[in-house]
Length: 90
Image (cartoon, rainbow, N blue to C red; front, side):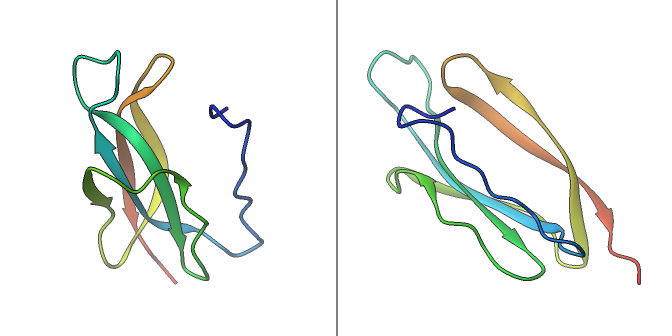
């Protein structure tokens, strides 16, 4: 759930995640930078951006691989995020 409410990005049949992009920045009340936006990329499309596009951009993913899991740390904000990748097999 975001400050603006819950938002979803639903995958279609045969669709898989290939990358996760976003921004991190300092915000009021947090000692360290936090994740302030996320955008999901798939083999078919990309999501709208969830959050704000300011601060430092990051991108997680690797050509020829798909995302099968997420890990990280969060409280009322997202402190860190990572992905688990596996090779794409046909």
